[in-house]
Length: 470
Image 1 (cartoon, one colour):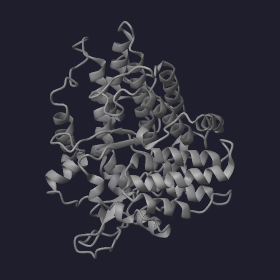
Image 2: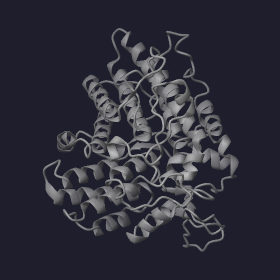
Image 3: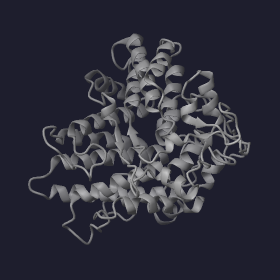
Image 4: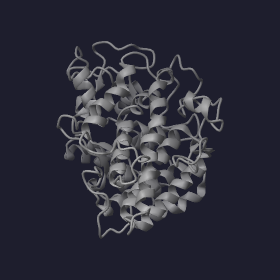
């Protein structure tokens, strides 16, 4: 199963979703290719990576999900095939296409400024995500076809570069006209008001990841929150759409439907997440998980790092693997919880009263997004303790972590930034059998990169902290 997973995702979605389009045209052989098609191809591949190759090792290695046997760091290290695939596709299929799209658009008269802005925003999203996964990465010399062995820029420089890309994009956006539209923009259909909001929210995510290592970022966080320039509603969420139609389904659904006969038997309930939900009396348990086939109706048996699954082991709910489930890149609940943190930490004026209001609104929005009825979600959110100087770090970090349950890439970043090394929230310990002594803090560079590019950093272990999470 492990060896065919990447192929399956491409088979189920990459080829069939857009089999009638021209997104696979080689830009080096055709100068007439529409930048919109390159954008579409890049966005499609980015979404596939987020729900496919990157999900499995990160969800297991960060202990958000469990596998049907042993899981954790050892599993993540073993699963380097997918990680190597994700690295290559990120640069060749996502960033190269976006770079070519920008160059082509900039040679057009008049320049389609909104289309360029959309590409730059997606570039910033991809580069920042890649840096949060690997640390130092090619950025200033990357994906331009001009440098054979690009240098690896320091993470701080990469993230500052992403902020600059977003500022460039924001300066280009004309909200009174459309950009790249549907079906090539499956995020917002060319709605530049929403693209502008997402760009500001993405800035907020990057700034929050940086602020503990670079305190000067606090002012920028405060400005975005005070201005209210980010995502302001559920309708603004950044998400790649899938459909309940053959060939256009969420790849996780396709995998389960084709290879498991629709029976979820690959992704299990992890004990760290389950124990946290129980401790908080959180109503999301039956929405995150489903009992094993031989377990009782409300019996959830979680897996830890040394147990093998049984027919009673709880699984990730099939409701989270639906055919038309979108791939969420940025949610309204994530925005609200960031705003709560900004007020609690004094980055924006208003204090703990506003921080508490934002916390409860964010938790309610998160619960509803997982299927919890609105009244129950509101009641639970209202029962959460008011934030104070003594409790805000713990209360907020736990809710931010749970909110990202189906988004392991962001969930892993959130956990690493939630506290100094060894004091992250929620508390986790390395699983038995891990190849390193600490928690997983980065992905390993692929061997092909180490062997071909002399600039690739070498000898870095999985548990070495990145710049942003020290």
